[in-house]
Image 1 (cartoon, rainbow, N blue to C red):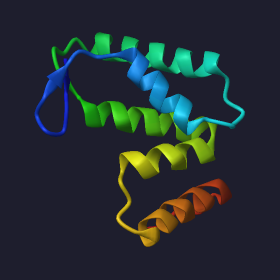
Image 2: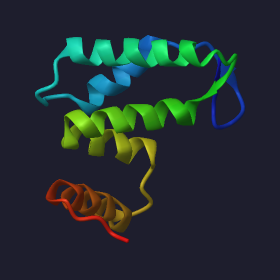
Image 3: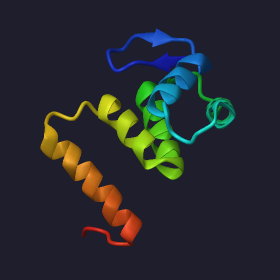
Image 4: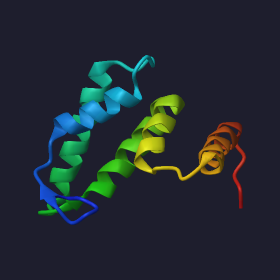
Length: 108
């Protein structure tokens, strides 16, 4: 079961993960096969944990981390919805973090 932020519980649905990733990857060089494999890998990871419940935030963070590895634009698209940036400054900070990580710089 997936525990939502508001406390509701629902069955894990791989299709929801795929649809969210497809939206983030729209018009990006990411194949549907790669998205489906990612969703399958996530589902296997959840099952291997052996826990009866997992939080939706775990799934969201997993998807963001996966997208960050394969396509920066898809990552930013997903993160902007998932993290609900309050303003342009938060959004710009995330973009700055991506640029700095690509250049090998890390804020301390």
